[in-house]
Length: 280
Length: 296
Image 1 (cartoon, rainbow over the protein chains, first blue to last red):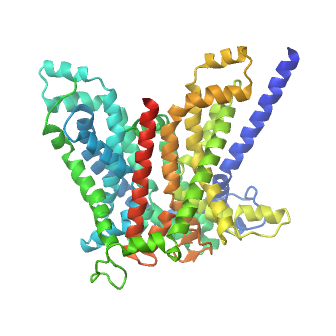
Image 2 (cartoon, rainbow over the protein chains, first blue to last red; image 1 turned 30 degrees about the vertical axis):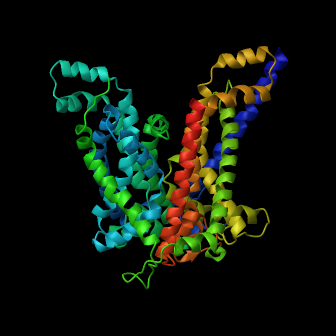
Image 3 (cartoon, rainbow over the protein chains, first blue to last red; image 1 turned 90 degrees about the vertical axis):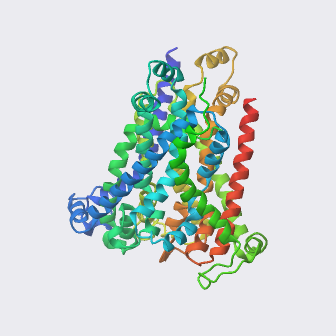
C-alpha cells in the first residue's frame, strides 16, 4: 500500500512539473514583452534576456505623454460604446421576438442569420469600402460603427435568444393575467430577468470592437482617427529597434483592461458561446 | 404555449433586420455583382460585365494562385485541428487527474493567450519571438551557439511559425472546453470500468471520448471555422504593407484580400470571395445534417 502511495506522489509531482513548465512556456511572450516594457531602451536589445538591471516606467510615461495614446484610447472607446449601443439596441427586441413568437419565416430567418454569421466579413470588405467611399463614410466613426454593429447584431441575437429560451413563459402569462401591457411585461419583467445575458453579450461586443484591427486600419486612414489597434500597428511598423520597448508598453496597456474584463465574465462566456453557438 | 402573431415579431426585429440587411447582406449581393465585372484599378467606374470569366480564371487557371491557396488552406486547417484536438485532450486529461491541487491556477494561467487581443499577440510574436535580430527565439539560438534563423522568410518555416502561433492562441479555448466536458462525465462509469479491469486506453476509448463527443461538437466545429478563415496571423506575420518578409504563403482568405487591396483585381477577388462563401455554406449544411442525424 505504501509503495502505491509513493508512486502516486511521484506521478503527481511529475504532472505538476509538466504544468509549471507548460504555463511558463505559454506565458513567455507576454512576460518578455512586460520585461522589455520596464527596461531601459539601451539594454532592450542587449545580449541578456533576463531581468532588466534597472527597471523603469519611462516607456509607459513616454507612450502616455509623447505618443497620441490617449487619442487612440478615446477613439477606441467611442467606437466600442457606439457599436454596443447600436447592436444591443436593435438585437434585444429581435432576440426576444425570435425566442417568444412562432411566426411565418422565423426558422428561415434564424437559419439565414446562422449562415450570415459564418460569412467572414473580410470577404465583403472591398464591396463595403467601395460603397462607403461613394457615400463619404470613410474616415468616419459612424461608418465603422455601422459595420461592427451589423455583424455583432447577428451574434447578439443568437446569443441572447438562447437565454430568453430558458426563461419560462409562464412568468409572462402570469403578468398578463395580472393586467400588464406587452410593453410593461418586456421592460419590467423580461429585461431584468435576462440581465445577466444582456450584460455578457454587451461586454463581448465591447471586447470584439476593442480587439478589431483590420476594418479599423482600412477604414480609418487619418492619423487623428486611429484607434488603439491602428496606433499599435503603426508603432510596430515603424523602425522598431527604437520603438519596440514603447510598443511593448503600449501592448501591455491595451491588454490589461481586456484581461480584467475577460477574467471577470469568463465563466458566463463559455456557456453563452456553446448555448448560442452552432445549434440549428 | 408560444405566442402566435403575424406582425408584432417583425416589428420587434425590424431595426436589426434593417441593419443586417444594409450592412451584411447588401455588401454580399454587391460582391456577387462585382464578381461578374472586370472592375480593377483602371476600370474603377467604366467596368464591363464579363460573365463567368473571373470564376473561370480562379478555378481553372493554375497560375491565378487560387488553387494552391486552397490547398494551403486545407492543409492548414487539418493540421491545426488535429494537433489542437490531440494536445487539448491530453492537457485536459492532465488537468483532471485527481489530487492535482493547483489545477485551477494552471487553468487561469493557460487562459492568458485566449484573453489577449489577437492582434496584440500576433505583433508581440512577430517582433518579440520571430524577429531575426531581436526575437527571443534567435537570442536563444545564438546563445546556444547556432546561427540565426529568419523564420518568416521562406514558405515552410513561415507556415510552421504561423501554426505555432495559431496553436498558442487557439489551444486555451479548446482546453477549457475539453476540461468542462470531462467534468460532465459521470464518475461511476470509470468506477465500474475499473472493476471490470479496463485499463487507461480502454477507459479513454470507450468512456471518455464517446461521452464528451456530443458536448464538444459545437466548439470543435466553431474552431474549425475560425481556423479555416484565419487571416490575421498570416497577414500580420508575413505580409504587412511595406514589410513583406519574403514568404509567399497564401490561404484563400489572404488571397481574396490581396487581390482586393494590393493588386486591385476587384472582380477576381469578389469571385473568389463568393466561391469561399459557397464552400462555407456547403460545409455548414453538411455539418447541420450530421448533427441532426446524430440526434435522431
